[in-house]
Length: 265
Ligand SMILES: C[S@@+](CC[C@H](N)C(=O)[O-])C[C@H]1O[C@@H](n2cnc3c(N)ncnc32)[C@H](O)[C@@H]1O
Image 1 (tube, rainbow, N blue to C red):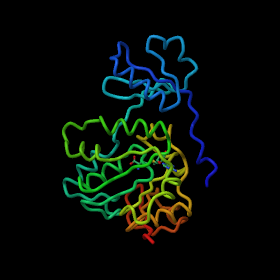
Image 2 (cartoon, rainbow, N blue to C red):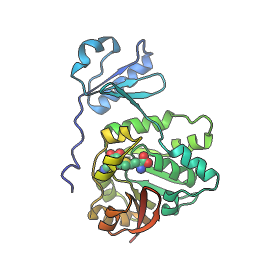
Image 3 (tube, helix red, strand yellow):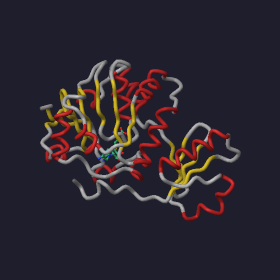
C-alpha cells in the first residue's frame, strides 16, 4: 500500500450559503457540514470568521461551489459532452474501444475524478447497464456526486440521463475491490493520478487540487481481475510507462494517452 494512500489533503473547511438563503439551503449546508466534519457558518457571520479557512463550501441556488484561494470551483463534466457528441456522430472513442462495452454493460470506474469517463461509459451502457464510480477524495466525491445529480447540459437530454445514471460513491478502490464479489462487473477501469498526470493536467484544476495521488498496486490489480468478468482497463499518459510496469497490454493510443488491458482471471 502506498504511504500517501490514507492521507487526504487536510483542508480547514466550513460550509455556508449565499446571502439571503432559503431555509432548505441552510439545511443542506448544515447537512454537508456534518458529512464533511466541518463547521457550518451562517453567511452573515462569515466576514469575521473565514480568515483561517483553506476552503469554503457554498450552497448556492443551483450549485455547490468550493472557494479556495479566491477561486470558485464548481462541478462540470469536463470533456464528456464533446466525447458523447462524437459517439453520436459514429466517431470512435478510445476509452470505449478499450473497454469494449455495449448497451447493458456494467462498469466499475475505480477513479471517478470529474466523472467524464464514467459519463461516456454510462452513455454507451445505456439504461440497462450500470456504472459505479469510486472516488477516494471526500471533497471531490461530494462535489461530483451533487454535481452529477443537478448539472444540466440542456441541449442534450441523453447526456443528462447518462450523467444521472452514474452512481458516485466515496470509497477507496483498494478497500472496495477486496470486498466485492468475484466477476461482479463486466469491466473494471482505472484512470489514476500518476505523478506525470498531475504535472500535465489541464482543465482538471479541481481534480489537481483535491485528488488522491498514486495508482493501483499489483495486489489491487489482482483483485480487479477477480472482480471483472471480462477485463481490467487502465489509462496512462503516452508512452505508457505505468501500463508496462504493471503488465498491461497496450490496446488503444491517442495523441496524449493510451489504454492497456489485463484479462479477467
Ligand atoms: C485522473 S482522475 C480521474 C479522471 C476521470 N477518469 C475523469 O474522466 O474525470 C483520478 C481520480 O482518482 C481518484 N483516486 C486516486 N486514488 C484512488 C483510490 N485509491 N480510490 C478511489 N479513487 C482514487 C483521485 O482522487 C482522482 O480524483
